[in-house]
Picture 1 (cartoon, rainbow, N blue to C red):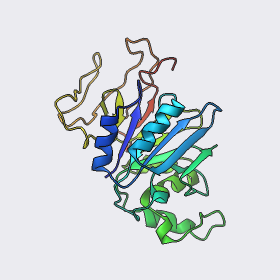
Picture 2 (picture 1 turned 45 degrees about the vertical axis):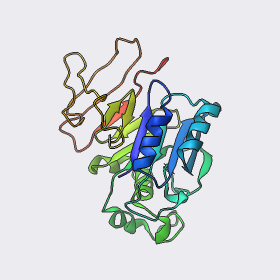
Picture 3 (picture 1 turned 90 degrees about the horizontal axis):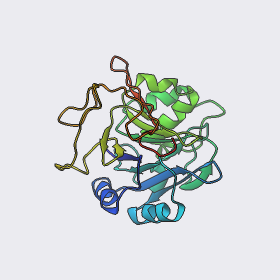
Length: 244
């Protein structure tokens, strides 16, 4: 199923990352806004390398970490996450991007039918069937439809924007100040799902069923939006971050 982690307050511990990798062992990736104001990423790596990047680069919060378990596509570094949201959707395992970067958790079964109408276009990404997964197709469709496509699918997606903000699509859970696309790596009694003021909280499984709050008591600016009656949920992460 994969897992996406979005730290919001402090860097994740080695224990959390190791647990996530154990459940999703087919390659990790990380993306962050670098000190030149662009997005850096590296993928097809393990927890030791992710921890090394965090220690050396000290990426500003929020940033995005992903661990893959292959459900669509081969087990190989090029199909780990993230994928650039642009017309090439390049498969490089390391780089600096001027475009947003997409991470995906889930299995999108309609990916081939969605990209086939564009397969003859001049700007269609290079590569054969073995260079594709449902997640790469999502990044291409997000580019091709200017994100409008994401309104009509039920997938968990994180997009780190050029300015460093992170947009989440789908239903997410929070554990130790980390937004998680699922909690398969932390099934413990230490995970608490409370409510915020007079707003609704979470059910016993951590699924968010309604929330809309601003200005946490910590004094940080927060922008969270939830559309319960929409086909999708889009959450902007500016949560519990100093200076946000």
